[in-house]
Image (cartoon, rainbow over all chains, first blue to last red; front, side, top):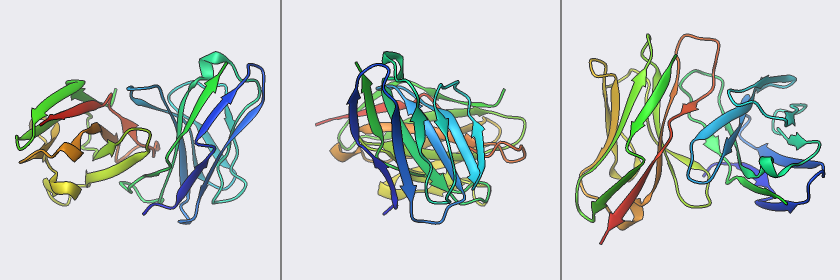
Length: 113
Length: 115
């Protein structure tokens, strides 16, 4: 059983609001990731981190930002939500070595109205 | 550019029939390859992975995949489909020798299992 948690599972919020999606893992993994997934579509990497104080942008340009102050915590923030941000956001973590399995949280489904 | 391609966005099989989900990769260096499954409203779960130890990889739930370098393929198979196998399946890769150390996913294949 993977120990990676995302909150909230579902969020409906108005345009212009600031939101933070939480992701925490208890496996001590150095690497963490955020993927964006539209319904029935592929996953796009938007942010990743190799460890504390390390963050990198992914393949898909995103207006969101991330931080990695603690190993176990990798929150994603949108300063001003827009309807175009409506999507599912998946957090994952893995060990540092190449080819390591990524463990995924259950996702946050965000709807901006 | 390195990528994985999943052929067929939807595959439908009868219960008990062979499952074959196709994945081809494009890379100058053999990558690490993975198959993940996603059930509705859930995150992704690893089915199996190839990391060069053996070309035939066995995974959970009776799935297996064979790495074929000559065909640049990593197709997922299961001899006999169960209703519970209905889900979205993603092929993913990580390039072995670059600084980029994150998984890149294919577009996914939705498997339907008919009774």
